[in-house]
Length: 259
Image (cartoon, rainbow, N blue to C red; front, side, top):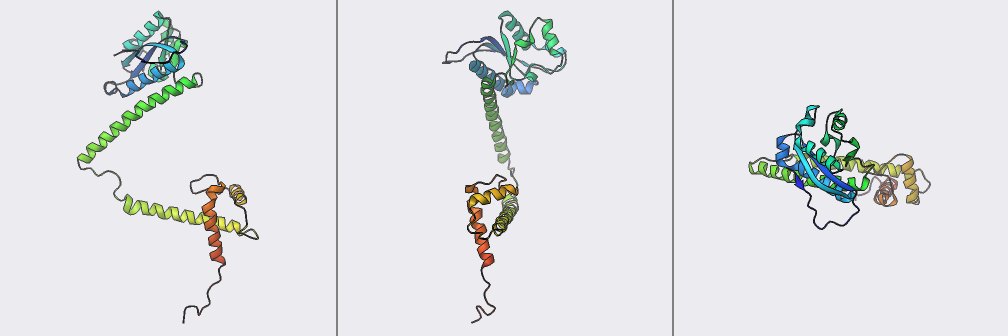
């Protein structure tokens, strides 16, 4: 199940040295779908190219990484380590748990005269930031495409079988209730701004920059829980001043409209 490196048209880079990739999934179902193996492989190829490694081959296993016995039972891993030893190469893995889930794994490596420091883990971003980011982005891209495709296919199957998806009451009850709650919150916020403006001698001449500062001092945030800026304040400030005008408007006399 290994595959030789095929990178057509790759730009010339300074080569760090030879490398072998190692990828692993735990179960046959994972291995058959190829989702995780394919994504790991793409990440290792991208990382090797970005960092200047000469990736010779990527070897894989469909096996558990748990326990001491997993070391001997994984043929892909042993082949990768032996090839790396023979070629004075490193072994590249996406994550440490793809290599092993056994705490004394390094002792097993030393028994076959393999230096654990010659294992390169892509997720060590602090050591290999640029290459690691490129590799992880590639891995997430492949996984995201497969997950999205699988989800869409599953939803299509459900629809074809007459299954109604989603919450039927969303548009008739849930959404209207949400809109009402949002409207109440918006009204309360405008009232707070209006009350704050009324603390000054002339609420209609207070600069918006001053209002922004006061809102921040009082811990009042926008409807989206963001810090206030002049642009975010523009509409709420207009509404607050209209509210003040309505409050201060004189009431009509009791006889108004009787004739």
